[in-house]
Length: 215
Figure: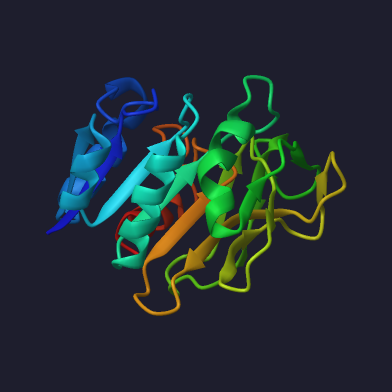
């Protein structure tokens, strides 16, 4: 059984919120994935995967050091943000992600062609990398873009050629750092609502979500 720590240490969205995440909880259980809400950073060491879904409190340097050590030991860590930067979500995520060579831009990505329900903020893309064959297309709502600064970071999701960045950045939407020795991973995603009850049954979002929990 894969053990996942869903962090509540930095005021993240809680997975026990039935309205938003009941489907993710059910699908994870069916896939033999145990998800616990964890309120102490030190307890992350007891889990295979650690998730920060929209953290609202910046990470302290000693917390970043601890999380970096977990990745060095082969664990998977994921952090997921949102578009714009009105509540400083990009800045908050960067206090952790920049240690791994990934920066959130505080961007707005639109796509007037490849979108869901004729809404240009609901990005649909099949430009996926380093994913299993059963994940062919995903919908990412209200997503930021990313910049990478490390050769150990690889892309996971790009917008289609029709996607546009308000900041005129590359439309890199999800990426991951892979530790060269342990294979531990740090995943960064421009949106935190790809696996909520609205999105998870669209396209391959379910498979994408379960993959991120078990990479």
